[in-house]
Every structure is written in C-alpha cells, then in structure tokens.
Length: 124
Image (cartoon, rainbow, N blue to C red; front, side, top):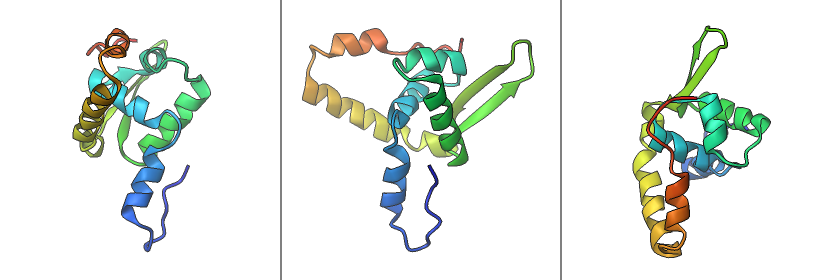
C-alpha cells in the first residue's frame, strides 16, 4: 500500500487509508502495549496473522515512519520492531479506542482480552 503523494489529498483520508489496512491497528496496539517486540513475538501476539501479511504490514508501517525496524546480525538474526516518535503520537488514540471498546462490548469480552494482553517484554 502506498501513501498518496497527491498534494490535494485530504490528510485525514491519507491517514485513515494507512491505518485501515488488514491487521494494521492490531499490530500497532500490540507494539503500543508491548514496547519494542521481536518478529517472532509479534507473530505470536497477533493471533491468526500469516507471516506474509505481518511482513507486508510491518514494511508498510516502517515506510510510513510509524514503526522502526532494528536488525541485529546475530545467529539467528534478531529483528525488533517498535513505535517511532511518529508512532507514539497514536498511543493516546489507541488507548481511547480501547476504552470505547471496553464500554461498548462490556466485561464479558474483557477477560478474553486480558488473557491475550501482551506482556511488556520484548522477548521472542
């Protein structure tokens, strides 16, 4: 997915197009709650996503400068993703969406959500 280079494009439309892709908000939510996270841990925490789609979404978010990718040339290589300064600007919005979701969908889903809540550890 490419971000519009059209100078007449609506900024809200550009941002919504970027964030509305499959799995994008969920990936950002996990990074918001987990902090810098290795690829394998992200794959585990974003339950149901394929490796291909996760890779595509991460590349798109990195190109948009919302997340960063840190590569360690170890054996095996370690790749860690985290929110950039620009990505950090989304944290309040993500927390507001979380609050709204809890209010709308009640406490019966809360226990399931808590069970899936990522740890604050960047382990793989």
